Image 1 (cartoon, rainbow, N blue to C red):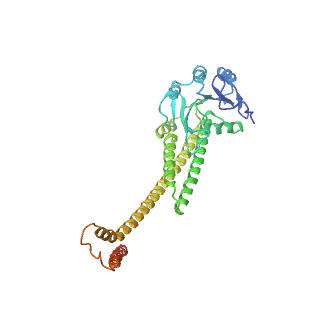
Image 2: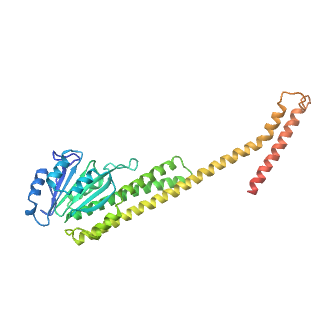
Image 3: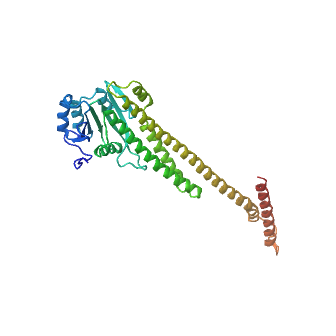
Length: 340
């Protein structure tokens, strides 16, 4: 296994976080910025199947200068670094694949749902990737390279990254499904609590992930229909397959959003039903108390001629009248309920 003691989310003076040379040995060789610069200057003398992958930290201001001066990237790559559009896409520019990939942060959680952008420039011999914050998929790719996963071309490295991103999304969907299952169990058990708000937050997160992580279909279609001449047919097929796998994950995410929507509607229906039941009980109490309130109001007026004021059994007569009216009102309420 390649030693990785010097690999961190920091970078060297040139902004390079890590670099690998593929095709020199059976496994990729870890290199620093000086070795990368020497390889780039003499890459024509290297093996025809050899290529290099350099990963930069854009938070280091030296990164863009080093990439522009030594990596020979297309102008479209530099424009993409400062472009306001964050949509995931892979485009062909000047015989170079320019990829803008949105990925979740290395410490991603469904509560925060932090997402950042990764930029890639892919040619037959050179792969340049750059980011501003640590990302999960690119870290998975580095670990795979360190463990000796066979990667025979620069496009296959890109495909591996897309599949790693799909795997990360699968885990996110599984975690979201587990949360939805828990909410559904609480719903069936009659324990609503804050579940409606939690579902709403989870649904917003999934919509945001789908919007930012889904590749642009038009750009991918154009690329797959007419790939660069240096891209092997096998690499094109794997890129198409990885795109289809990504689409399956996004479809699962859409299905989960529909499930959340149905649960929200069910919870809303239960809340409305409970509110209606409470209002009905309040109405019954009001109706039953109406005779008491009316008679108490009449007898409590401070005017002369109040009936039964001097009668020995006046209180019990009034109480009987109130009870009679209350029973009659209760009978009407029960009859109305049975008719409904």
